[in-house]
Length: 463
Image (cartoon, rainbow, N blue to C red; front, side, top):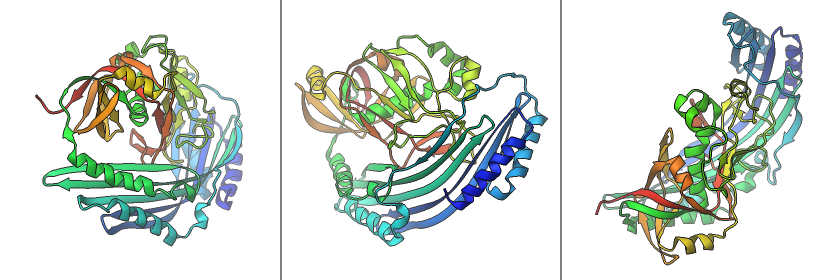
């Protein structure tokens, strides 16, 4: 822990012991960031900087008070202000959050090549090399290459006696190419990031070459014919689907605030076949959604959202757990130490089944293999996703590539139509992240194995 945080830790301990309130917590962080980006053949940004900040959150007589700050030396005054704010608005709830057990942890990211031992010129040279690769085709009109790293020391303390320190090292790159043929534009990108050192982004030439190749290949692909298909989705798209279409529905604040979802997301309800298991687990070290504890001092755990096809639990903060009479799951997360924690996912995935990918394609026989995701949107249980591409499958064999693919439907119907789940789960993170209530991008991981789904509506060109 650096000296700034060490001093803040000692002050926080004294402040918490002196506050006159029912409950209080203090979060502080200090860190350094490097960001480098290229757009086409131009340097877009080279930036390094340091940051420091924190917050105090207080519950007193039924109401919350929250104050964020970027001056750790005045923490005592901010804590008093938070208590004052809580006293101004006494609430009606007697038990707005579930009490927790004290958590004592000191965690540090394992790294091979520490970020602070790599000079700026080396970082610029690396992302410049990748940018040259993704520009390396005549059909490529423009590119974007981004490098980002962050070293952050953080502390969490509360009046229950929790004391958590975390030294986090995060590093990643994001690469994208836009290929053009006449009026046809075709983007494709990929990203890799995680907790570790500079080793995470080294030797990614193959990823850069795949980015430019896929963008160019998609120029030549045919637009798909719209209709209803049986499909196999790849692990990345399986993860995006379950995160966006189902994971957000499992966040308890969303359910609690939405009467329609209360009627739908009933614990014990059958949502899929008995071999379908969907999990959120923030305790998996190394993945982008890992947390030593959440931002309310609750340890993360392996939470089965769906087990054996049945809705078993949902994701909670202390407050939503109390409101719904359930247990906190360690999913109260904030984008920074200066933001309020809200219910968020961590590492969310479809668990392995017992089939092989080959079994899925053999069972599919004729249909589509749908790969990756460009983006999408959800509206309650309805979803629309844009995969990167689809590949025709005939007699279990892969054929030609299609572009302009759009998946849409009802998440509950789609989950019931899952026919087989493979045993090859993969997890994906990246420099992007999850967004909610203005807090973005929050680091998360998502994933799954190959999944066979029947009767999926595919939008494309009309016959």
